[in-house]
Amino acid sequence: MAPNRSKARDEDDDSGAPSIPYSEPIGVSRPPEEKEGLLRRFLDLLGPGLITGASDDDPSGIGTYTTAGASLGFATLWTAIVTLPLMSAVQFVCAKVGMVCGKGLAGVLRQHYPRWVLYASVLLLVVANTINAGTDIGAIAASINLIVPVPAVWLVVPVAVAIVALQVWGSYRLIANVFKWLTLTLFAYVGAAFLARPDWGEVLRATFVPHLTFNGKYLLTLVAILGTTISPYLFFWQASEEVEEEISMGRTTEEEREGATDKELKHAALDTNVGMIFCNLVFYFVILASAATLNKTGHTDIQSATDAAKALEPLAGPAAKYLFAVGLIGAGSLAVPVLTGSAAYAVAETFGWKYGLDTKPWEAKQFYAIIAASTLIGTAINFIGINPINALFWTAVINGLLSPPLLILIMLVSNNRKVMGERTNGRLVNTLGWAAAVIMVAAAVGMFLTWNQQ
Image 1: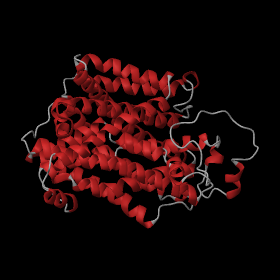
Image 2: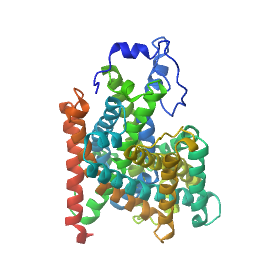
Image 3: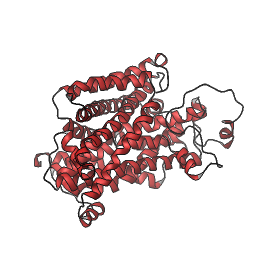
Image 4: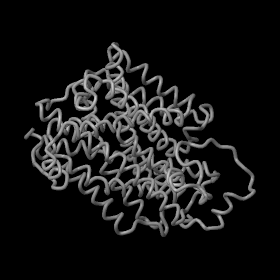
């Protein structure tokens, strides 16, 4: 292990060493140069953290936040403020593990921990991601149905096949470059929230004074919000994409990737913080807009994409359903490859297979087979008669139950000197990371204890 990459190694990256062909993944393609403008240097620093933050506002998240705002009003606005530092710390820890160890989380577990720990964690991840990907695909189909008068159930399989085809024969870069712009339509919730003219005194109180109600409905919603915000796939995806970023810089061997300089870790912290701020800004205003529109007009039980789209009516009027559809299609198309891709990364590292979203299909057959299998198995969820919006909410609840053990494991890994050397967590990161784990466990326990009070 080389926890502190030397200055000489950093300089060697630009030396006359033989070049190894590779294909750069989405994110940072090169370190920023001092001669560039401040804005350009800032944008060049953004990579896996920003993509992770954008993908966190997936259909499951939007569905959950809409349901929370519609059913509970402003009561859960505070969660957007409280979870921001927690998820920023957690994602930074995951990024640091990938950078310091030169491999993804599954690779780290395989090298340093018993096989049962590795298999159990990867199994939890694959189960959570498969369910999440399936419900997100169903949400994309339901969103297309708002635009095209074709039954959503007929669209599920074509959507799934199209996404797998793009991942296998196209490039995730292509998907991200196209659909990340569509996700910007989610900022329409900001305009809708202001145009709905809520009681801003009530909004501010709900934002900065946590409102806790110890009943089943409230705690179930809290678990769902935590689960869709601090999700299992984000942990594994962040670490694996940091490895991909280093490969894109020419560090093609594990030895070259091991270790991280202070400057690199600061860049990773900035990247993850920006990504999480992006995520939570959307998260906050989806709840606010839904509370100010749906809840205030008595629409507290969301049963369809059409119902959910009504939160945007103050901004878009009759076109609200189209704006909602475009945003959800973009969010889902960005998130599904992240979900299935993170599962495939973990399984491939577990068994020592070749992997990478820019690796040719015939070079990483098992990796792409996992992507295809996860997508298609998840797709089957859409044929068991679950309402699409309810499916998104319950997926978030499942994530809320599966995340805590994985989060606890990640905190143990990141504080293990045999794994991290001198790059174990500092006091602040440890406080926030363990707080996230404790809060998620407490919310899950409270949910079960109050289950009959719904």
